[in-house]
Picture 1 (tube, rainbow, N blue to C red):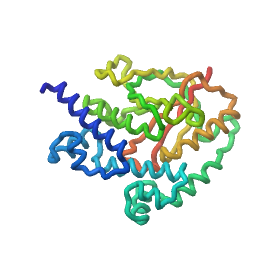
Picture 2: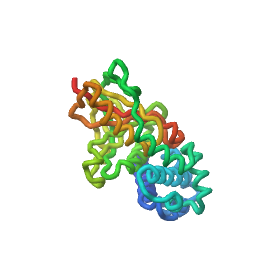
Picture 3: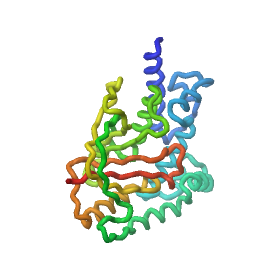
Picture 4: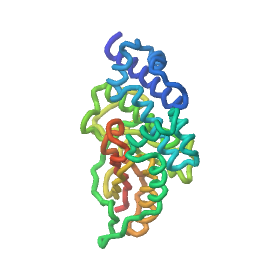
Length: 285
């Protein structure tokens, strides 16, 4: 098998495992079983997966289960006991310790803080820019993307596959810009129909070698940028404030273009409480 075919084969195997993890989070995701799904020897499987994704399979499962748990704490009505069980923890104490380690807050306090944050609004400053919003003149950028359809909370699967695709080709790494483009409003579009792109910035002349990879251009121009600090599960609060408080009082009008998010640090290595996301709203000139 030549190098090109080996690359495609390895990439397909790892993507198969990623899909299985995302689709079966409620099941027992034994690492040896995942090795079978990838058709790799258990002796080498762990190193190959980590080499192409940046984390072990066990770390992926743990991170995704806690991510889902955080979303349930913010939006759902399940008890903490139910959420702990769904995340694979046999006791509330074990779940509390694991959640607090990553989210810097016990689950009950996290839920209480998320509810309270929905009532907070920064003040309007004298120059008609809300605290946390900056209007920038941005340059056009080209993205290579994997399309995602469905809940925005599950776009991580597309980003995960994009990382594997890029890493297998020697792309990405430190300094790479990762961007999510969101075309629909979750409050008016059915969850199953929500459209998004998981993308990475590339040079203008870049040509992908995979038909599943799309190229998308962001036009740049005047853009309102709001910095969201904290877990992705709470980013909806920032959107509500941007649209409900800042925009009506800013004197600005949004352009006929989708919002997008630029992720300034790595969720695999950054505690959720320290994640930085720039929400970018293109504006009319």
